[in-house]
Image (cartoon, rainbow, N blue to C red; front, side, top):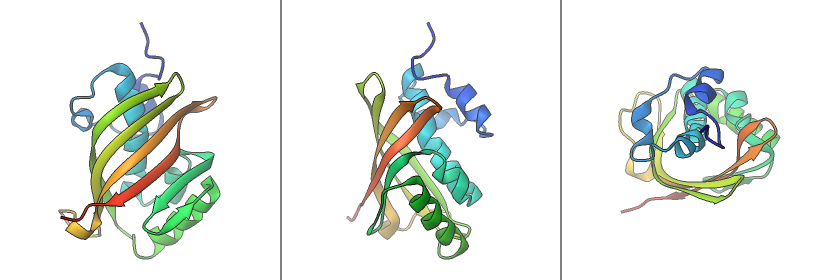
Length: 156
């Protein structure tokens, strides 16, 4: 039986992303892997420093909390990330991994992950840039989209 959320390998291939099966960790069910492709697409947007690729993962009314900035539309997210990739985030990447995947209903899922931003040239995330992230993923007419991405810093 096919996954109700899609085929992770096909979703990633359509986005031009090489599948890294180690990212899934223990979340290896077909639905879990499909939902996690949204996080992998965001990570790829950072890898490419491509604001369009990053923003296009969101719904039109998507929400992104980045540092103290609460962005509430795909276009605000696009402009914020464009400025970031041209400025302080030039060459930056993100690395992370899922901690939990929950299906809230037939069209909504939540991911909890941990990771952080690596600035250009860094090989490890500095403690002040380590975060815990809550992702709300929704099924739309044009595939899986990110409705909300909210980060909280980890300090320890």
